Length: 108
Length: 119
Image (cartoon, rainbow over all chains, first blue to last red; front, side, top):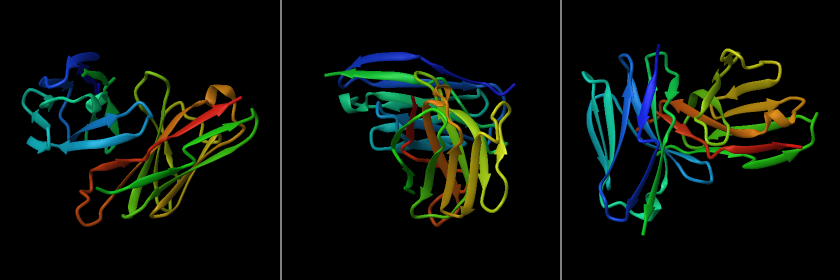
């Protein structure tokens, strides 16, 4: 069964802290997406990766294909990073299976 | 990155009426568009996959006669909620996937969503 698990469900941190959000999946994939959803609901695609590591500004995404695991890191976190972060996986059928999301709150 | 728009951003309607939601890819051609719905504090659920010029493929449990999807061009897909009822109130999000320049084929770009409230 194609499953995606995220942890933690909720994360509260102080401004400036290094943040890590984890995503595990059950079987081989063709691509993994990290998405950001703000309180208004709009979704922004942060990364799509199938191997290795990608970096954009203060955001870093890594994926370990052998361990079926991906992490999203935020360096020097800021209150504006507060959002729900969602891991979504393409198991090869071109549809996305979504994790339950991680609600991140950064306190000034 | 590529931009996807949705219209309207929110809509309130009376029970029994039909509501049309538009999803447009603004700067690329979307060969495939996806429609999702999201209930409060829950994750996105795929409703249907729409390919330009062909009938949409609906996920199990989604009524195709209730949620009509039309993908008439490479930049526009519409979702019509027919005879809407309060239980249809939800956040509807589309995404588009295509191939254009720097846009990777497998990457999906999401619209801002449409919040539907049925009274």
